[in-house]
Length: 503
Image 1 (cartoon, one colour):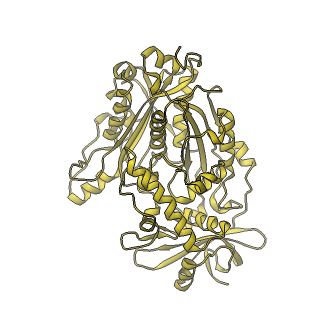
Image 2 (tube, helix red, strand yellow):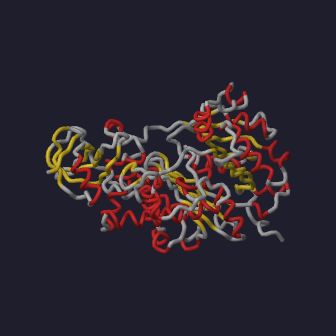
Image 3 (cartoon, helix red, strand yellow):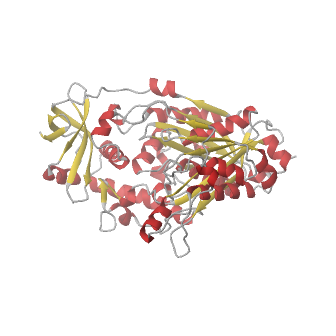
């Protein structure tokens, strides 16, 4: 009797993955983003051993939109696998990449479709190389350019507020660095102590990337090389130099093929290839960072974490692997705390299976697919009854999502849940006043280095009566002080809307 004979035939299962990386080097050749995606999907279908039969059964190709110009890469993918009539879906920035995976799993489970492909990729490194060489990146297949997707998914609301746009918080590094300052303050660390911890955390990620098949940067940099500012590691937003920041100039793609137990069994796809998404939970509640009562907390992530473990019937201590969305160290630390995985940080257990977005690679708007594909590979390698968790982030710690995966028999029926209402109920919102002036206290701050060498301090500030605002300072002495000491909790004076000075 096969292990999965008693599993509901409609249960969704991932049967194929593709992880593609074209690293820099003498053999590197620029290519289109669509070509990378096709390569990933062909690899995913080929590993099932039933490429022709499975490809023809794909009813839907889902693609998160990246920085590329191709309107409909999903159509070229569908044609390449022998499913030219498959429906193509493209999601825009601000839609959780997780939502595409959850839709694919839900659609096959409901019987609406037989099989789906979720694929994404980026070719920004091709653009860098071609720009330096004065050449042109090869054109994508015509069908990717000359057609529109059958369906486009767009966010219902902006994931960033007007005050963030106006006051230098559209850059992700600036926001996460402010969150990092609040984490450091809560932990009671000095700037130097916290910098050391960040270097150690990211060095662990670098080690994972060195061994990951699709790792982008496999040098396995040391903690000091990662966290200490140098000529080759310039300051971006304190405490983050270059090697604590997501690297998106990559040529990478990843794909997952999702179908049901019934179809996988009918095609004769080997059970050791099967990995089940047990439960998939997301929140689309939007609350900009300056409005959060504690800017280093994320109640929506806590709600998602609790819900996904409950829905999957899995305990936290049963996890064999985890991959937390890892654009910046703050994202990893906040998610780990909210989802009950903070002990992994203390125990030295890796919270990544890719190496993270700095070293594993951070293809714009596709890391979640990369992480999911890598998790499927890792759980297969670990063998029967292995369980892992992957997370997703959209916006700037705005929309969270979590999936639990397993090579074991599912304990409960597959669940795809949206907990936005519960997340909103669990979250305290503070009022932001863009015109706030007078005495205030710093809730979080960072110092950014501009290209001309000057320093700009950006702070989320709070008045005595609980009003929040965002303000900046170009005082170089103050910036220097904030680089060496904890600014959180210090009093300042907002001398005009958006501008502060020492108290």
